Image 1 (cartoon, helix red, strand yellow):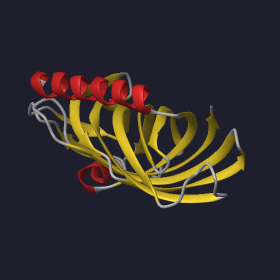
Image 2 (cartoon, one colour):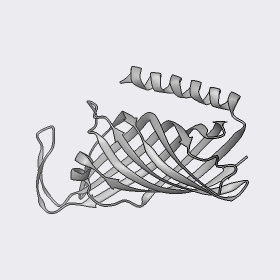
Image 3 (cartoon, one colour):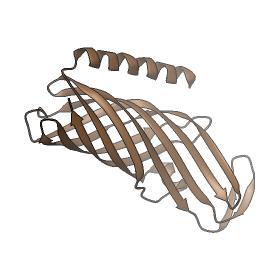
Image 4 (cartoon, helix red, strand yellow):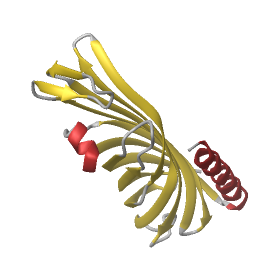
Length: 202
């Protein structure tokens, strides 16, 4: 896992250096992120989450091609019904637990825009991201808390739309599927992100 993380970091730094050298335009994107749990994540916490933010920085390598990096924070929460729960270590506890997930994804991404965002009011796009996510899962029973945490390798395809307010700012809408692979420390993490952000271009 450490080798994968080092590889991702090296690849990300190389991509960002290339983007910085080649880019003619840059942007920053501050987003509010909402999330819908999927797969085994949904079994742990099933509630739609409105607790999420992210920051993205990037540049346009070509008029319709951009590359960047984003860092986010997503929080999931759900109170489960009263029952007896058995943990991986064999411990059994009876009660009404509160389940939490805190996730911090770091994503290196590339986008292809079907129109040039600099000269069009609306510009749809699709993108692919690769990166890593730190996940912490908590299950709280009163004063007792049980948790697992660790870094995970993830894939992040997305589709979106950029809306230009003026030559220097705009609004970004996107839907991203976040899939992070299970490790020996934490279970897989998967969810759809529905995000809206303010974009500043320079």
